[in-house]
Image 1: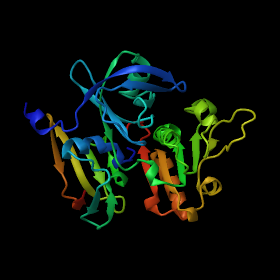
Image 2: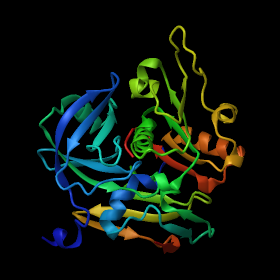
Image 3: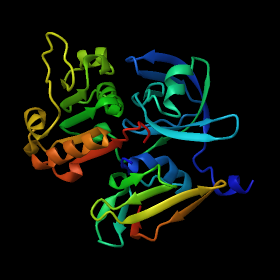
Image 4: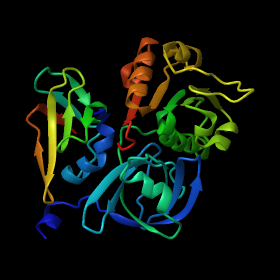
Length: 247
Length: 82
């Protein structure tokens, strides 16, 4: 009772899994039916809470993969030593329930009024909130030009591959595969660094707005590289995933 | 342990303070650097959650949950502007 009196300003809700979509061998999208969802902005996330039979609880934060107005969806990468992601990617089925709270975050958020040109840079599952931004860009009919630079280890690790192969008007997609490339690969085949950013990124003089999401070391490299290219730090929004996948 | 950033604790901060805080600005009591909370260095797997200054690495905030009560130490912050 005391707990209820001092906590719970952001309430946990019970969502139902509507659909499950396999993105890669390790990555799955969960489309959720969330009663009384207040709506979200592109780039926000939500917290998922699992409770074991003995009462032990684990919470993790996941970026929302869908645009505002679309059904809430999260995309989860399975981490073999994880407490939460193996359940979300392996055991959860359509019709199952899930405890969550959100939407959360106001910093790593893009709305059409923020303008651009937009530079989106993703490492691995860092693509998830950027995919929400891409969908919002498309849904809102925004004419802000967008460039996405997406780094994956291999072709099989590319999340949302079909969607990224057919970008909306005004969106340019550049991809790099850092460990292995299939025959005939025409994209980049090296790690993202200042030199690669120099080839892909909007010139700083166009006053671009950048969103960078990925593992911590990736984000540090990209954010540093963009500042080197003349991007003001305030125009480079960052979000770091741990190597452990939890945020 | 790898550092995350303040985006990771948006839900926790919202729960404890009742308002979105990742866009708030914190000023380090040690070096005076000002930073948006979303950009601060966050360790979530410490005993509790530890937020450090991106400039000087001083501890700015510590949040620990004990039996459903969240204890918050903000003594490393000179100022927090929402």
